[in-house]
Structure formats: structure tokens, C-alpha cells
Length: 325
Ligand code: ACO
Image 1 (tube, helix red, strand yellow):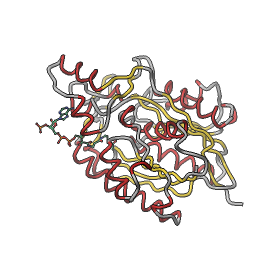
Image 2: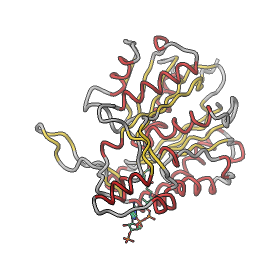
Image 3: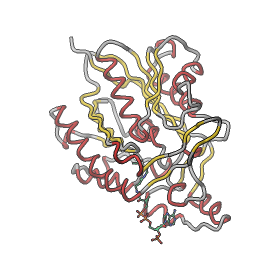
């Protein structure tokens, strides 16, 4: 019998501090930097984002999301045999956020590791978990996207600090006789490292280089729209499906204009696009599972719906996962 993987539970968590565009504009104005609610909404679709308290880490946010996903799957943490955390803002240089999170869930022994593919991290992690389940190396996986991007933002740079937020989303992925995940498609092109990066590193007991996020927004924008369409088409072709088979499109929540451009290219009506960027900002690897969980809990996404998840981000990396929910 063919072995598939299937999402059986979703969960998410946002830190309580909600920061509106007006809040950010006031903070920046105090430093003589101009921005406005109108500029941010018009260019990005973002109205607010959440920022974690200084002592809260990605594994803290991820553990909250994981517990919610376990509850919705009707599983206990001890039944999990694989944990993958997608993050670019781990708690420490090492060990992985996944190991720290495993301990916070009160379990031990199962495989746990991080995947680092920036904003594509969740589709990368889901693809790895799907492969491990299909080959029999795992049966019940927690796949989590968790980020504290506020830690790597330069709050003197209005071109980046208004775009990102903190949060976590999680799914439980289980072995199943029926699909589940229908097809996946992952890519990277390292020649674009410089257009979106945090170039600093830890060396000799200090941070060497710049520890803040740098982005060429227009270069990212142009690349993102093209690769999101090609990844969706490749995934549909692998699964023998067409645009018309997609019930819900859940792209990485970076910018409403990129998301709407992608929906248009896939000939999808905008009411089939799941949008949470307005309230979450760009939470990098957490954005897709946060959006998925919000849409499931609001009753939009129902069992049996066909979902196209799409990630794009630093690396440059991109990819898609087509699945029956
Ligand atoms: N408030 C007010 N003005 C601003 C701000 C701000 N926060 N930021 C930039 N500006 C100014 C610029 O200085 C510039 O002024 P100038 O004309 O006097 O030089 C003007 O606004 C236009 O700047 P652009 O960079 O051309 O603005 P653009 O329309 O390209 O929008 C944005 C910028 C929103 C970053 C856009 O390029 C974008 O969304 N790119 C995609 C990048 C993205 O989503 N990245 C997220 C991470 S990557 C990922 O997750 C895929």
C-alpha cells in the first residue's frame, strides 16, 4: 500500500504585543524618520504586526503553536517521532531551536532539527517531513515555523523595519493511506544572497559584520512574483492537477501586492487567497502555518479542500506544496 503524509492538526501563536503602523510611525518620528500608516498599507498591505517580549525566543513561540497543533490533532507530545523547526532566528547559534522546543514539550528521544531557508523555510520543512514519512523514517511529525524577526530589524531603517513581525505556526503531519501531500517543488539560487540577508556572524566572541536585515526590496519583489508562479505550475504538473483544482492559495505573507500578483497569474479569484499579512506582517518561516491555522480556525478551510502553499525568501529560495487538507 502506498504511504502518504497528511496534515491532521494545525496551531499558531502570536506574542501579545500588537504594534500598529501608527505606533511604529510615532517611534520612528521620535528619531526624525518619516513613515505613515498610509505608505505602509498602500505598498505592503500591512496594518499591524506582533513583537515578542525581549526574553521570549522562537522556541517559546513555536512550543505554544506546537501544543495547539497537537491538541487539534488529538495527539499527545509523546506520540511525536519527528520535530522540524523552520527558522532563521533560532534561540542560539546551536543547538537547534527544535531540540530546545522538544524539551519544552516535555519529550525526548525523537529526531529534532532546524531547517534554514528563510521565508521558504516552512515549505522546505514540510517537504522534508513528507519525505521522511513516505520513506518510513517517521510516522507523526511536528513541523513548525517560528520567528522573532524583530531581533534582526534595524529600527532606524524605515525600508525594512515596517515589514516584519514575530510569531509561530505548526502542523502535525501523520502517515496516511490516502494523500495528503500531493506534490512538492523546492528551489534555490545562491547568486542572489545579497538581495536579502543578515550579513553578520558570531566570531571570536563578538558579532562580526552587520547583524541587521538588509534587503533590496524591488529586486526581491521582481524575483518573487516570477518564481511563485513557476513553483505553483511545477507542483500542479507533478500532481496532474490544474489551477482550477486549487481551493485556497496560501502564499508566504510578505506583501499583498506580491500575493495578489501570484493569484492573478494562477487565474484565482482574490477571495481564494488567504491573507493574514495585514495583521501579522511578514513573519518569514512562520507566515504560512500562521495563515493556514487562521483560515482553518475561522472555518474558511475545510477538510478535503485542496491547498497550494508557497514560500519565497532569502537565499534566494522558493518552493510550493500542493495538498489535500
Ligand atoms: N515609509 C515611507 N517611505 C518609505 C518607506 C517607509 N517605510 N520605505 C521606503 N520609503 C521611500 C523610499 O525611501 C523611496 O523614497 P524616494 O523615492 O524618495 O527614494 C520611496 O519610498 C519608494 O521606495 P521603493 O523602495 O521604491 O518602494 P517600493 O514601492 O518598491 O516598496 C517595498 C518597497 C514595500 C519594500 C517593496 O519593494 C516590496 O514589497 N518588495 C518586496 C520585498 C518583500 O516583501 N520583502 C519581504 C521579505 S522577502 C520575502 O519574504 C519574499
